Length: 416
Image (cartoon, rainbow, N blue to C red; front, side, top):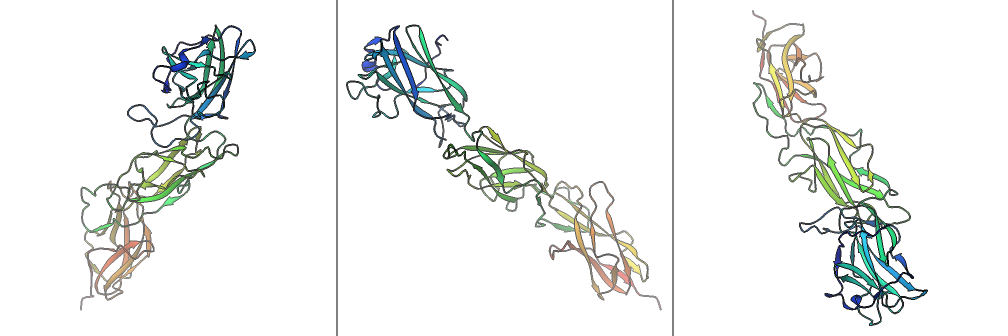
């Protein structure tokens, strides 16, 4: 394979002018080069870059490694012989100074000078007294795939492959899941925003993200590291995104500062810090996409969120403000509930009559389910059993509050 002339990326030059690396002689046609990458397995790319294009924040390791070359000429130590080194593709890895400058093969005969450096625009490695040269490779971009370290001399090429994995979970990580949100879960309304009315509906019921009372669920991400590399998940980034405009994500339980996408880092055990799934008052089927490196949570977790009622209207039907005594059920009240978008909601409620005397009206049923959007409002019947005044009180099923009452209804006595 021919050597590429792609530009060489160097992240840490050892000397300003190349030092003794520029001395010596090119390795000849009878020369040989052995290549050893110090780190076993793959390196990890980054997934976040700063404004200068450099990796940002804590990183998943390993993301760099030393590379040791052993140069020989005619089966003798290649002392002073040099070779050219580059990476294909050029953006995959950066070349730089040896990470462990005290390791075997890192030093030349001067004892403290580099064996690899940038000379005349090319990265050159020169064998020390033992024929060793040492440099480092570093993943400093979001590029992933199989890179090649290419060593060239005297029209010869020696290539060594290095796998760069995407930042995140490797394929052999297991038990990847989002905890706190599970498909099949249901979030009921809190009823904290319910207002009562006996009149026409208002034109505006406010924001679907009410300040100070947004519903939220604490969530975390968890995965099990591969047995072959138990430390591989530390600082592994996980991306969580909401798939609905009525869901959001936040690092704060108040959800005052919320977004559609968060990035969290796993710790050494594969656990993320807690964060929060924020749920709007409109609710619905809210899904969350969770991905990291080569893995994604599948199937996508989702949660069913009930809409929050904003208005509960308890209205006396026209012409039913006064009633005659009878033993027959009479349609008296209309009851309906609405969400923040003024859509009618199917809401389970309990019914009661408050009056003087207590049994002025007798209800035909004690609980009902209110009608959804597009259906006729629910009509509540009662029997006017005693002369007096009473009103209908409606509360959410099995709750004491909030209570919404109708206007008074008067039951007339039998004329003398």
